[in-house]
Amino acid sequence: MKLYLLSGWATRRSVWKPVLKVLTNKLDVEEVDWRKAIDGDLDRRIAKNPERCIVAGWSMGGQIALQAAACNPGSIAGLFLVSSMACLVEREGRPGVPRQTPHKIKVMLKRNRKVYLRAFFTQCLFPIADPRIIGNLLEESDSITMNTLLSGLDYMSDTEAGLTCEAPLMLVHGRDDNVIPWMCSEYISRHNADNSRVVYIEKAGHLLPVVKPEIVGELLNEFSEYCIAR
Image 1 (tube, rainbow, N blue to C red):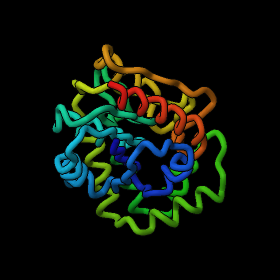
Image 2: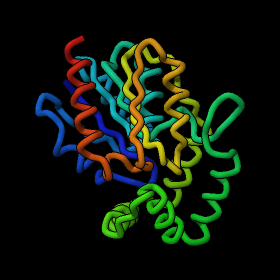
Image 3: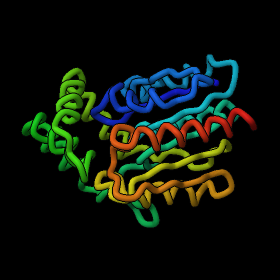
């Protein structure tokens, strides 16, 4: 079965790299760049795929996956969302970050991009910030233009991904996530109560595919087996 992997804002392929070592060979894996996905690349891939597929997304990638499921009903065998949300900003009844946060991020990015991204990746890796991993993430982020980072923030803030997915969902979230509150996964699950499962990882932050790859990989294998058997 085809598995599409989506990374999150300001990151690229390295996010899922540790998990790839754990995944079963029953899956035909394709990584999709979030920058191209928000311009329709994921939808085009799903449309060309003759069979139903699984879409896994981390952070912003999960939001894109939810939106893809809403736009491609019947084509998705399952959604696997890690540290994700339906929309970045909070509103009454929907958890998220404060509404002014995206604007503050834009200001800090324009003031000193490298300083902000270093702080962001450190926050993603909380409670253990590995300088080597931060360095790798910063190096990869160098290939992402400022305009793309800003448009990605707009997408996360302005898009409210569909919450009526017909396919099964598994949501994985760290209890100590300081970037996207774990309540965001709970919110998505409540709106898909008949076909969703939430797994909370204690003492873990936002970048679960990097810091907890064995747990994330085994959960994705388990979920994939379930989707294949349906």
